[in-house]
Length: 222
Image 1: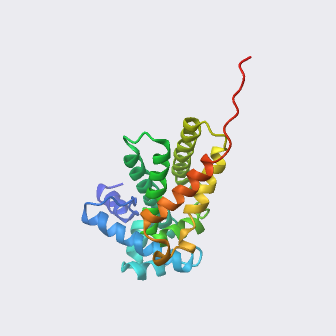
Image 2 (image 1 turned 60 degrees about the horizontal axis):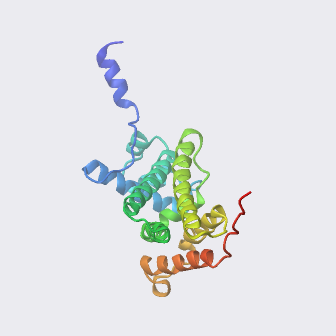
Image 3 (image 1 turned 135 degrees about the horizontal axis):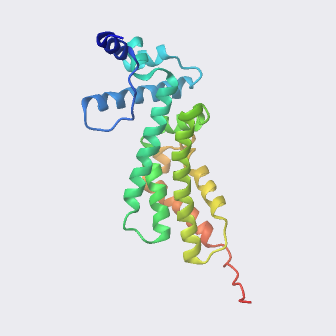
């Protein structure tokens, strides 16, 4: 095949979209498009939203949207990947140099709430469209979410060992996620305060509820 024809065909192929990284004009524009897509998915639901809806919201032509993203599934994938990688990276940075197990759990709560209280539509989309991604896209996002879960589980296990308490770390983690993942359904800043206020209250509930449990029984040496 002539080189010119090969180049022309390659130019018509959809470009591989990537999660936005602040810096370049392209990345900023990508972030804006994902914000618009998040709003559309939040209002219409993933199944109810069309590429034409996403095109109108983003101000990009329908042909241009298909060129860069191929499908609405690709947009949902990028929204989820950007969200989970961002919150995970920020959490790891904040945990560096902090040794107290209780304080590390409070950092986890605050990091989660700060991000999602500033992006409540995103939290709703992530909660309601959890199973929408299929095949490899869904597997990749599931892997990032497992890393996030296991990090929190490790924090709970550290607390359990440090304080010698008898509680189920998995139950504690899943209960915590139940608290922090549904705030978009009830949060009112006039009543509930800002992220720091809410994180402090939730941290007290989680840590005091855990640490008031009975002491782990000492096992006698054989």
